[in-house]
Length: 238
Image (cartoon, rainbow, N blue to C red; front, side):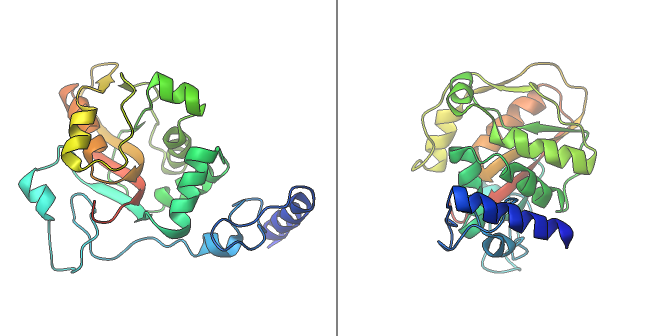
C-alpha cells in the first residue's frame, strides 16, 4: 500500500535523526503512524472477545458465568460498558504513551479501535474530565482526544464541558474499589440540565468502575435518560 510505504519511509528518515526503539519489543520503531511502537507490535493489539460480564465487561473465566459478583452485589448506575481490549501488552503501552508521555498521535489510532466495536446507542459522547489542576499539568485530556475520533467516525456528537471534575483527587493506583469510591465522592458535576439524552461516557481505562460509576450518577441526576460507557481497555480482576 502506498500509504504504508510512505509511513515506513518517514519513520526510517526520522529514526536516522532521532533513533527510537519500540517500547514493547525494543526493536526499531518503523512506523510514523504508531511511533514509537513498531508496526508489528501495534498490529498484535487484539479486540477482546472472550467471556466477560455483560454489564461491566469484567473479563471472566467462563462464557457461562453471566453477570459478575460485583455487579450483582452493587448494581451499576450505567447500562453497560463496551471496551476494545484488555489493559495489557501493546495496548497498555499505547495508552500510557498517550497519557503520560504526550504521544498524541496515538489518540486517532486508539479512537478508531474503540469506534470499531459495538458501541451502545447514544445521543452524545461525554469524556471523563480531568480536574483543572490535572489538565494544566498534563496539557490535554487524552480521553477527549480519543473521543474526537470516535465522534467523527460514529457521527455521535462529542459534547465539551458537560461533565466537570471539581477537585484534584489523589492517585487511584493501589486503592481498592471502596477507597476509590470515597476518593471520588463529590468530585464531578454537570454544567447543564439534560433532557433524557442517552449518554456514552468515554474513559481511557476502566479498572474498578469507580470513576464511571460516579460520573454516571451525576449525569443521571442531571436528567440523562441512560448512561453507557466505552473505554479503550478494561483491566482484569481489580
